[in-house]
Amino acid sequence: MSVTRTIALHPSRRVLCASAVAASLALFAAGCNNNSSITNPTPSNTETFSSTLSVKGSSAREFIQPRSGTVTVTLDSLYPGAIVGVGLGVPDPASAGCSITTSMDTEGGTDQLSTTLDAGTYCVKIYDEGNVTQVSTFTITIVHT
Image (tube, rainbow, N blue to C red; front, side, top):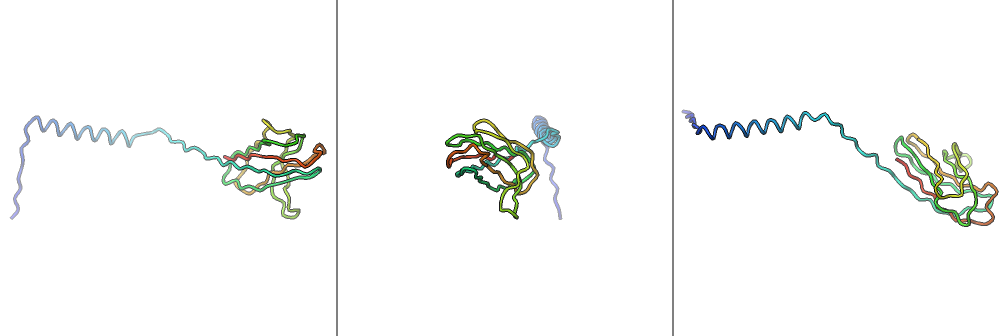
């Protein structure tokens, strides 16, 4: 045999319970009806490439662009200073080098080479254009977003 028991609430408690239920529903509805968009920040990767550059020589380094985005290359330092070429390109397996697709002449500092690339493997190359008079040390920063 089943017994059903009804509990009568005092009128002030009924109002309190009804208010709590209404407030809970309002908060739930507000949370579900949020039309604002959330933008995830695009992480950036920074790589540093330091080596030496010989007279009439070049030096290259491969890097992976994990997704379509912007790549910025900066020649941070070159000692002793000279105007050199800095380029971006794709690795060339036939010559074990870097086939440059875009480049700039720079002494370093604030000059930047920036372009948009698809996901893939690319390379950065620094090369003497006839201005380097002795073996020089350099540092290049590659930032990809």
